Length: 217
View 1 (cartoon, rainbow, N blue to C red):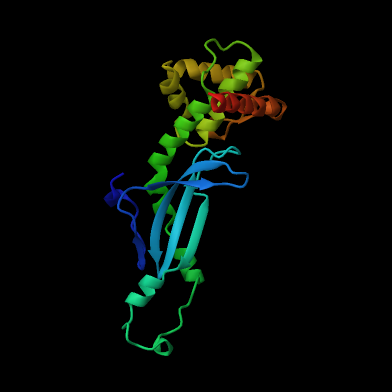
View 2: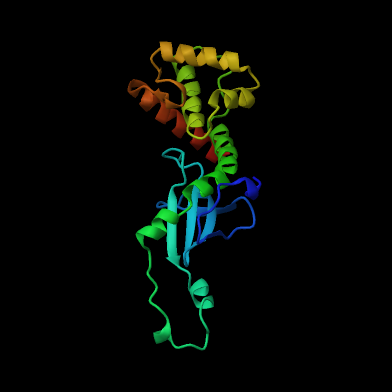
């Protein structure tokens, strides 16, 4: 993304990156390592790092999901004469309500949105491929409903993403999703759609089976 097109940062806030996002890895409890996008800022003398984990096994995040704030000693020190005594420096106010209100969450989301969507879609496709060649049984409909639900969590156009994934038309996928709703497998409308509670166990088992198959390759 062109950084010049992002939301304006408030006074006292500076983006510290050179690119649209920084891609790293984070290790969760249990040893699972996942990719994470990070955006770094200087906010009123504090270093603020906003993170967005990709491909979390418990579900994708529609917003950045981590925030780290720490004292920026370099920035603080640069604001004063290095020869002056510590006692002459005013006390640093720390993490105030004003600082929290200045944290640029909207800027960070806009900064990372496109890359997050790309990476998340690739992760979902990798986990749930191959899709059923013919969608006929309840298990087939659970499979496509799980894919749609997951894509809806990361994209504003999940049906279009299904079409791009499989090479089939949006009309075909819209008809399949209508049948999934008629069967009671998928509930709700649009991006608010969710797999019905009666089929949640089957969907979870599908995710586990498909991920295990992928990990064994």
